[in-house]
Image (cartoon, rainbow, N blue to C red; front, side, top):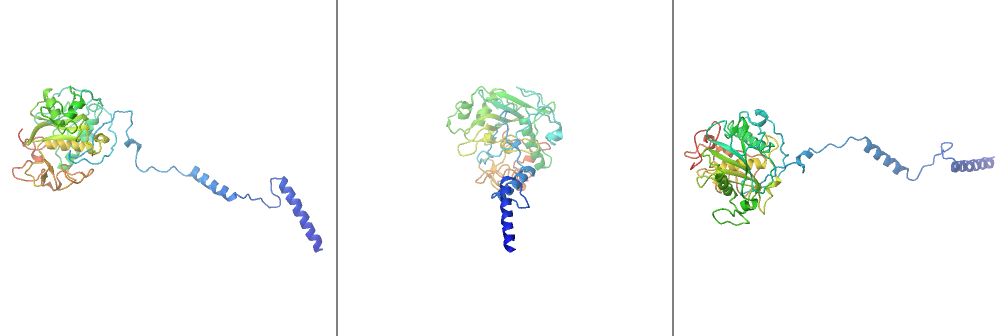
Length: 375
């Protein structure tokens, strides 16, 4: 009997094997498992996960911080105190809005400031009389016009450093020149080429063509020749040209008298990051490196930091903290996070007898009668 049962099982298995070889559907629950079944299952899980998982979140870096190459870019420099350039940062490209904006959007320290809606080749009628800072957009004769005076870039820049200054002082800002409630920006195209100004070949004294530190002096010379000689005005110049030594320059009265503070928007030197690797402020309340540099040079031209300040060093700077707007020294400028006169012991409310103080400057709203030395 056992022999017959074993024979029947062998016959049955033989028939089942034959059927499975012919028909793809397994019979009697005996399934054929492919050798790569585990790979297939794993790959299916990966595919399903990829197709059903949400898109990964961005890391907080928006593409908007990388400017489009098709729009005019504020080719603005990066180097703090001229003597102490720092590594570049790339803030957002400034808006090209040209319409008027509300005072609160621009600067709480200036009444009804608006972005200029048209270009002016002259210093227009002033809304206020007296001492004030007049903004000038200057190009060399062969320079590319980026329209920073009318596309909102310069207006936003000025507003940003004014807003910062107002916050630091508790309500004081620079008296900035306006016309009909809008920032008065004068456009000037020089008769001199970019190379001429960069090398200083038209200066009345000799200088090195490869390392000329007198671009500011050259700009003041030519602006005076063009009629920018109002004794009540400090001219803050956004120069859309080159320098081979720095990103900006200012006068420093009484040692160096002058009415021009300048930002070299395509400046730099061989050992520092190019100035044009930075851009003007994208927000009226968020100054960038270049905007701080423009304020820094304007402060120099007002006479700061005076030699009577305890931490004055390197011709008009301070040495006590790299976080100070007017710092120069071995350390890098601590931007962002700059402070106006760290400790208030050098040039703002420092209470130093017979020493120039920004809070009392005739150029400040709510200030006093102090003029830059020698004015």
